[in-house]
Image (cartoon, rainbow, N blue to C red; front, side, top):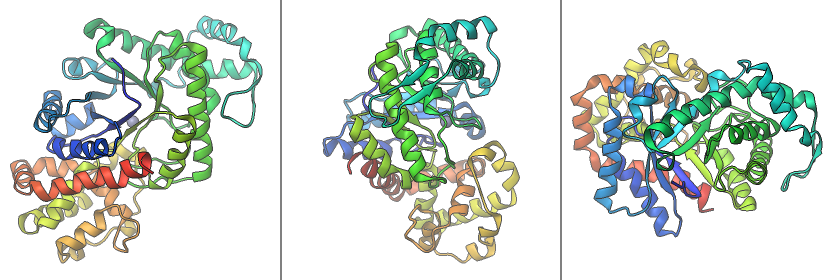
Length: 415
Ligand SMILES: [Zn+2]
């Protein structure tokens, strides 16, 4: 199974927007751009919402059938480990092996030693195509990278072999993710992590490092854009180098997690992808749910009531809702509007506070992050929420498609 050059991770909390999500990729196709849709959902999301893996599979299959999509599409078991991979097995054909928790755990000393011996040949000054500066590599550096990351890659190997045994090696796509950790990986670390991935025999087609800067959920990149651009370019160059050096799959590419809404880095990313003719997997952060709220607010009546109630509740349960997302959100409480003020808002006003349009004076970055993690509140509304999604399907669909196509696909791939 080969993952295409460009692929788009379309998370969907409530499994209702498969069709309008796919519609965005169909629009791209009409512009001559092939992007593989990948419906991703994590164990955490399923648990909070009460959905099952069968729901995600059905959503993808139904959307594809409804629109006669005859290109590849995938269902991603997102951020899995050995403890929960089995529940995804039957429904997924893309597996994101999350080994971030193992970074920093010490590998067997003999393993570290033989890793250092094997890669000694890179000690000295290394020139990598596409990177202006040469890289200095010392034996200590290789040893310290192995100390920090070898155990994590070995764990990825265990998960990979477990999946391969059940599904057969040719029947799924493998991503290795290390993004949910404190420290970003430098391009040099990436190089040796990729060497270790090759040693483990993991045919990774995408790899998700942690980049410098903050990738908060549903909002723009926070950090030094120039620094990110340089790091991203070096990572892309390292991936290409590692493919040749270590015999990793030819189509290996970077995966950007929480990649939606990072508008300020899309232009530099697009430039790098062009320069290297490189592929990209981009995972959105489940922001389709925010488009559902926008659609409901715009629909008025009961839809707007639901949106306002979701906000009021999320405010009163902020600590509980933010808990699992602490490291990927950054909400300034003082910037959140008073629920009594929000009570008076029109649907248009609510939508403009939530919609990620930085040129709009009503856009509120903090309200957007809070509502992003508040999907549990909507899940608890049960049929009231689901009925509203069905009733206002058209206006929601319009917002879902527009968000993916206009604000994401266009600046990243069609610039
Ligand atoms: Zn992630």
